Image (cartoon, rainbow, N blue to C red; front, side, top):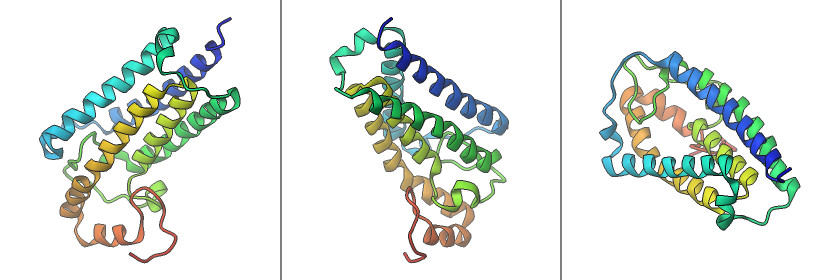
Length: 199
């Protein structure tokens, strides 16, 4: 048996669990409302989607033909790779918590829905962008399970683009919710919890 088979199965389980949660919540939040994705900036939107596509392609190649990804192999010991499976399992739970808290407010762009509500409970009590935090953990999980530098670098590029998109997203939220969002922003960190209530 190929030594990669257990890691491929763990990766497949991680992706099925986590993406199942995402698809379920996206379907529940779907309202037929149309969003102008140009609001996030055309160059950034295109770069983010291309980077995401490349990351998915590398991951699928690893799942189907892992030998084709040997050129990007990282020398990770098995316990470190299995830590990726544990992180992936954690991601499925955190993703459910995040998207269940967000509810009908969920979109795949910086635009807010008509009738959107400000969510400050669940993981949003601690950070303003828990979805991006979970996405980062998921990319770490996939990188460890695949032991692939290409996937790790692709994940870092996607995360960097999401971070670049965040100020625009926050401006939109401030326009939508005004002072309540500003107060929420003062007491929470964007990606890491604040240790105190100061700025």
